[in-house]
Image 1: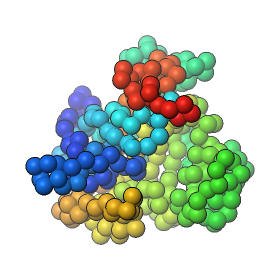
Image 2: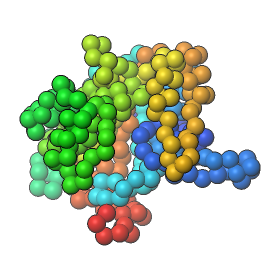
Image 3: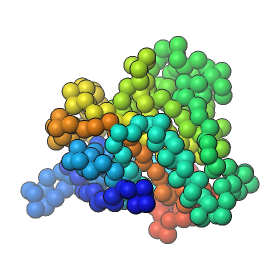
Image 4: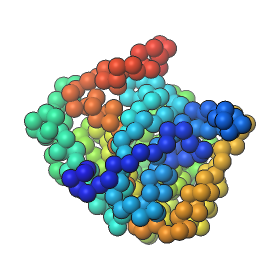
Length: 307
């Protein structure tokens, strides 16, 4: 990254807002601030964007992130992510950047771009396969999610999952259908494009279909390895997106990050950015079966049976 002109930066681990990624946060409080409620950082999205607004054009960080979610072979509450932002780029530019980075890391670590993972030959060479999130269910489940309502998608999800799904909007049902029917088929490195706006509040909307955004995720061996998008830079639109996204969990409201909205109002250029899961990459390249195999003190080693 330094060879490409990026500046490595540090971002806070304890934050006033839980924003930056979609997950349940860990909460704490600061004794010196009259026990003010704080959060462990889920992902440093908003801080990196703040640096871009402050005229840092190419920045990256490698840091601990915390997601208070499930524990299994590919999930751990404490993870290492690498995030980078580059001004005057979009998600197309970042797909090329990511593919080159992934292939280069594979060669440096393994000597070539094709490696064995649990008996499957995985090819990390450029270019990687591309598929839209709406096209994937058509290919793998024969379901046309683009024309179906949220209720119809909910019924379809119920056919593929053990538990009946909750009532979902179209924008929330599409990714759940994708997860239930498509993820396991994405073995070779695949860019999954154009996620619904309902799960992408920080991404720029696509022209021609306001339901979708300029976003991609990278899947390898059925696991999400990276997430990226063209950043939304309009402060008024960002505020409109944040308001319905405000979550109430355990009878407590999580605060809106108005500092971030005000920072966007100072002016943010077109920007592309990527978040890469370091733990999963380190798991994939040597062929480790699970994240506990590559994290010395993984929570998964003490997880209850069945988790």
